[in-house]
Length: 373
Ligand code: GDP
Image (cartoon, rainbow, N blue to C red; front, top):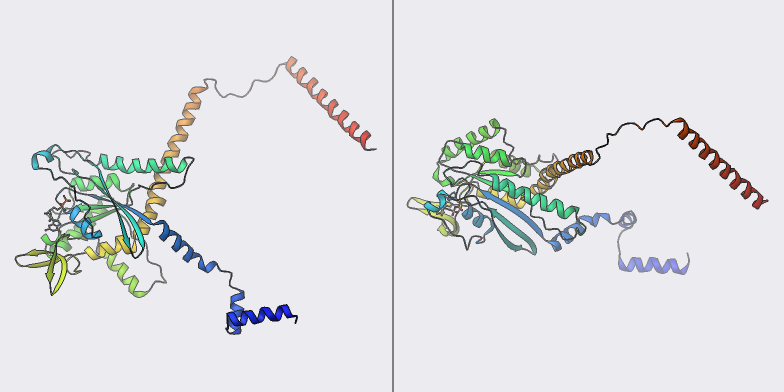
């Protein structure tokens, strides 16, 4: 063994005094196992974004729930309309954006609110401004993606829509059915039963069953939770099953902190007791929050991108191609018929040209041969 090799071995031993088997294993270690870490570091550096839409009649607790979900005050400058103003109000779209940071991870959260939805006396097609808004975001993304500069594209596509169903009725109202049917191909809809503290546990169960039945009967495609992997832990599988069973989530929101069982909690204080927002036996708020933020935020974004946006894109391209074909047809009024067969004179000329070309080729070959020898 030469001195070089001995030195190398010594350095290796000093730096890393490990067993022989580990060293052998290390030889087979290329390093791509660090790829998840690299992706993790890069995405944390870049930050995340999420766009959430809330829809439903005013007064159903949308803003209170959003504030409770993200522990921020997103509606500081909200102007509440009186009854008279609401009669003629049309649906408008408002956007609130906040940057939240938790343990070094940055999230740009955009809440798209739809004040005025379902408030007017005539609610005919009141979902139109909402579907238009969703389409506009897809269109903008499509333009940016097809443009020259594709760096730093702003993604304003709506990733999820929380649809608030009132707790007072007997299931879905016609406007709820129409809204969800108009939007289910464009966005991930998650239906919620709002203000669940107005109902007894039995009433909540009945209303949930009814809403589930009606969603199926009317062919509404709400967001489907992805199937759990078979190799997941039993505990995770159980949680996933519970999550799927408790839809539509019955939620309670509150912006006030009250004292319950010696602890300060978000809740609603009533003469008969306290309703705790984060108590799982009182409502499904925690399940909704976990699903939306901790377990399914990425899937919601993936479905938006891979299913809803892809559908929009395919539709756009199809429309563009058929328009182009139509324009071409109108631009060239000459029918695309087979070329007429040449007459005798033209055929003679073509033959002469062919012979001429042959003679030139023959001359080039001869010249090359002469030059070589
Ligand atoms: P939005 O118009 O849909 O945004 O509704 P708001 O969030 O402004 O709430 C309207 C009213 O309902 C306010 O007085 C809230 O305090 C109240 N509220 C909000 N969430 C709940 C809830 O879960 N239960 C009950 N009982 N009231 C609620």
